[in-house]
Image: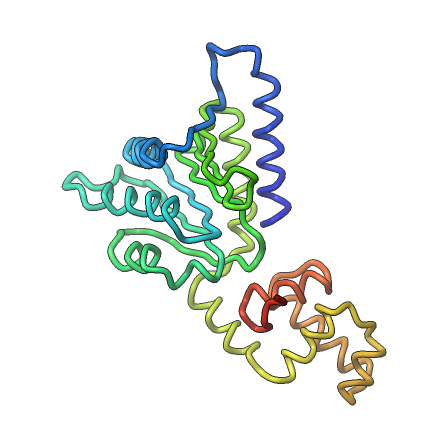
Length: 245
């Protein structure tokens, strides 16, 4: 998730540089600090969706609330969604239990939610032809980017589709979290997070090196990690280990 959506932001930045001298086309538009402009833009994009809406959320807050409220409002209209519209929400674990997401999953028709324990960059992609992106970790948290260039938006949509494949449906995510919430698993994850060698970790846990490595391989599969260090980091994001102050 982290690598893919970082690539997306690099792509947006590249597009901004390429088209900076072509003001009339304005393929990428920076929205200002007015929160109303963000809400209106999100509502306009979602209201005009014909084929699909893809949302990635890392945090709750006004931006997430505005996006999900626009989806609920569009869903409640008497004419409903156009036939075949796919509605997908990819969110971080800490967003899953928020009021906005809970309300969406309860009342919006046809929404599919998946959970990613990796770092997310937040985005709304509509019909693969336009996108709204923002970052609560940027130097200016009030700015958002509207992408209207079809090629750039399509690239973002393809990246989202690839990341979507790695997300976990809610029931599967909850099962994995429950299965991993044991003392043995936390001890293994702590060693991974701290970067200990297999030999040191196995010795401290009083298990054979082979047994320890078997635990590690299974944990990496369960948390969707590509490396041992990433598995340790994911354990924090899943709430299996406390965050360091």
